[in-house]
Amino acid sequence: MSSLYDGRRLSPARLGPRDVFRVGLSGLRARPTRVVLSALGIAIGIATMVAVIGISSSSKERLLSQLDTLGTNLLTVEPGQTLFGTDAKLPETSVAMARRIGSVTTASAVGKADTSVRRTDLIPVEDTSGIAVQAATGELLTTLDGTVRTGSWLSAATERYPAVVLGWESARRLGVTRVGAQVWISDRWFTVVGILNSLPLAPEIDRSALVGWDAATRYLGFDGHPTTLYERSKDEAVEAVRDVLPRTVSPENPEEVKVSRPSDALAAKAAAAGAFTNLLLGLGAVALLVGGVGVANTMVISVLERRREIGLRRSLGATRGQVRTQFLSESLLLSALGGVAGALLGSLFTVAFAAYRGWPPVVPSWALAGGVAATLVIGTIAGIYPAMRAARLSPTVALTTT
Image 1 (cartoon, rainbow, N blue to C red):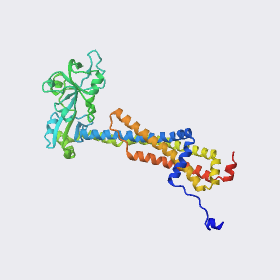
Image 2 (image 1 turned 180 degrees about the vertical axis):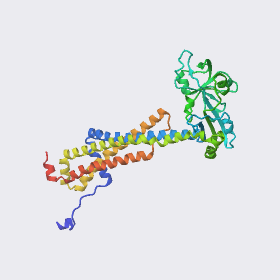
Image 3 (image 1 turned 45 degrees about the horizontal axis):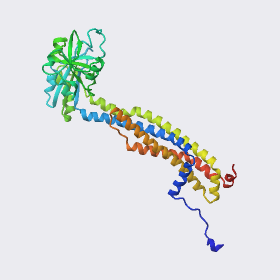
Image 4 (image 1 turned 30 degrees about the vertical axis):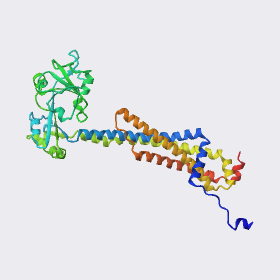
């Protein structure tokens, strides 16, 4: 006998990573329906989290792309309040004065006319449809870097006569789809000569009907005072121009002038894109937690149903550590299956939604890696108790269990 064993104790064979994977996979294949349903809970949680992060990142990328395209060198000047609390007015020479600043490349303005635009003269005067009638200088479209959807911008000829260019929202509200149509402004018909595309940095223009400066003075009683002045300068001189604009535009009352940068609103919107995202991520985390509970429940039931298998393995020499490893590997594989499926579904949903909205699809790699890592953590936590419970089973008790 001693010659056979040579005085050495027998030790159980070790399970390599490949063996652990095969044992865990065989346990899952024995219960495919339950595995799919348990993995679905994990997949829903991960898909929600990946999609939320992806959609938020795509939206932010769209806003940043807009900023790159539109530029951050546009400033607007508007009248503020006088010392007596009344509304101030910008001087009639505001545009000419702004152009005198050396770093300013272009400047233009609009001035609100005290009238309304209607589709026909039969519509009540009070029904303005939220559209402002504004006088516009000839360089407005250049300053705003805007484009015409159909027709043309006001020219040296049309800006002196009853011609109007509609912002895209104004055209939609008035039901105007083509140039040559006529709209009723004040007490006469104006011919639509152009319809603009949307202007993200000047949304107020989208809701305006624009007539020439001279035509507004002649036909609409416009007083010649700008209500909003737009100017573009060299990128490196924006802050310097911002500081001198109030004193240049209104030397006598610079404190009555407000200067702002429209691109700041887009930048703030991009920065705030994550505010609502956090709430949706919380909902995704709850779904992931519920999925983890489902995995734990599946593994506990698996231990109860497979007592004979556990007892037989223990009788054949499997250690408690190997039994623990087997059930823990099943839990990890089950969670990983749900995690990978969820990451794939979330990515596909992000790409589809971004394509629908015309956004650049962005799915951060850290979101995918983080989602899969989270499922592995959930799988480990969910599998610890069932694995320990399986390892504690006595081979004799397990084999005699019916």
